[in-house]
Length: 266
Image: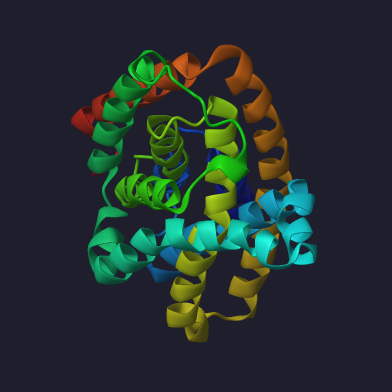
């Protein structure tokens, strides 16, 4: 992987990680279109640069993550909710790690899930109309756990962790804005755990050049993710999911055409 390829993949990660369009799916396709070697480093890089995106959430919502530390037992409720919500992903991620790695190689999986996810997003606003939960403090532990179960669907490349957890939040009667923000909060422990696990398994194989690519990739992903999060919250409140639904369906169809014509390998 070259520095330019690393930057391009990181831009894709930053742009798509918190939008309901699947960052992993986009990175897989980007790497294949760029001709990036399909090796262990590429898989590790795809997961590892999520750290930059995680940091963007912490910086943008700094008060939300730090204030609870000054509130005693009451403040720790926020962290406990995130812990409860992340448990399903930690358990299934550990058990299905090898299967997930195999799916990361499939462009066909990405194409199909992009289309299916787009169809679901087309109707999501009409299906879940009741949103009495407007503040994070109203989210109960059972609700957090159920949102965490929804997030597990995103272990399939192309599904989108953001979309799955936002849909889960709206199904649990959260407003669109709160569902999106809780999805961001939940991303921090989920992605940190997944990235940390992969890095612990593969860090010994990294050389000096590899570490340089990781540093550049995370820096780029951090900056781009900051901009993407700010855009998404404002856009979602005004316009809903229709644009993202249309985009997913169009991209999925294009991928199927590229696969069928041989321009993209499955």
